[in-house]
Amino acid sequence: MPPVPSQLSSTTNQAVRRSFVWILFSGLGGLPKDNTSASVSAISQVAQDLFCEQISEGSIVNFMTDLAEYYTFTEKMLMKKILRSPFLHVDETKISIQGIDHYVWVFTDGSHVVFRLAETREST
Image (tube, one colour):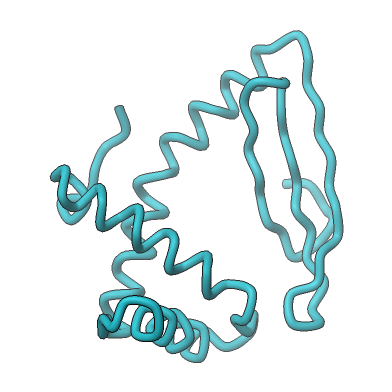
């Protein structure tokens, strides 16, 4: 079980976390890459438009930090499983987000999948 930040620990907050992840990804397609303030504002607007809920920009930044911490354990666990597998497939594809090229790396063993977004085609 991953370590759970205090804001994400209760069952109620797990539902809130899932909803917030959905809000984040609903707004990501229209978010400018190079302007964090505009990105956070866009996420706040998605919450307002879809749920009539006002979420402060500070809360969004804090929640994104908590989500990154929460899912770090899961990503590491999945990568360990993938790397132990006799079958490994790695691929990358170029995508454009508001006219800026990015690369999505996919790692899979056929049962587990990890996606990573990168600004370059270079592996890390």
